[in-house]
Length: 111
Image 1 (cartoon, rainbow, N blue to C red):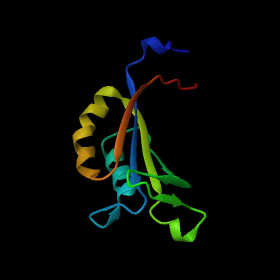
Image 2: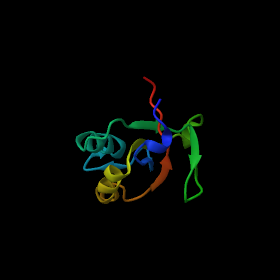
Image 3: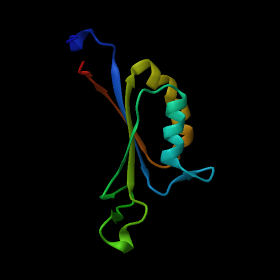
């Protein structure tokens, strides 16, 4: 197993948006997935929340029909720091409302 200290620097990027957010007539999470794939990101996961609230304080909950619209969605990926830095400007053009968080992570890949 390769020592964590010998690895390049990796970042975990999380993009918090809403399920109904769109860009050019397409769901934003789908556009982001396609963009990241086209830029060579090794893997991307889209997670749909079952409950949450954002800056407005309005609850979104999957179990109650009245509140089950526009649930939070997280698009996340782990990539080398250099690649993330090269993607940030373009990502911010896509994400007009939402939050992008970035944190340093250590990566271990099983063989």
